[in-house]
Length: 192
Image (cartoon, rainbow, N blue to C red; front, side, top):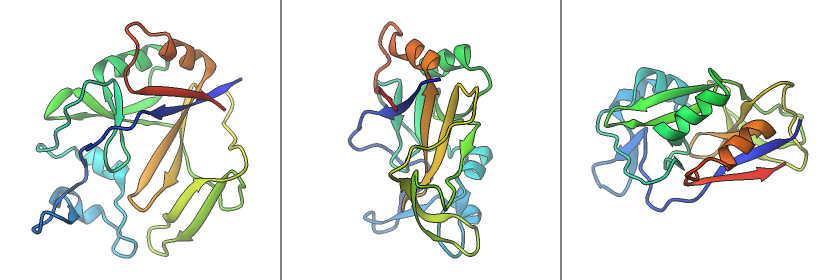
């Protein structure tokens, strides 16, 4: 089956989910709600645990798109996008509602594949001796393998900010998303 990488149009000045301005207003710190979820060695947040705990009430996103990225690399979707995906791939994505705007959710595919150190599809640097997270895990020269019969999967890449879930959707899901009317705003689909 053919797969497509789901990408998102850039948005200037997006908001953070897990961080807030520090006292000097020029530096960022993790929100108090999540401090106990930050690794004491590498200083990375367990984003999945943070989302399960709940999104802070003062986090606010205002945008006229169906899909965008937060400044901490999390996928934010509209209710329209959520409903469309649930109709074609039910129970394949976990949605975490944003309390300040219930029409928006953070979305993470339930099949979240962590890169393997010896896989040439990924460039991996460093590994935390405490939590086991990579310092960075980005795309390499090879093509990552997708488990059979998946509608939607994501690769758990790592940046200096934290987890970056890079989505892949099968041809059927890509066709439905691409041909939605009105067109989904912010969505880019690229064939692998």
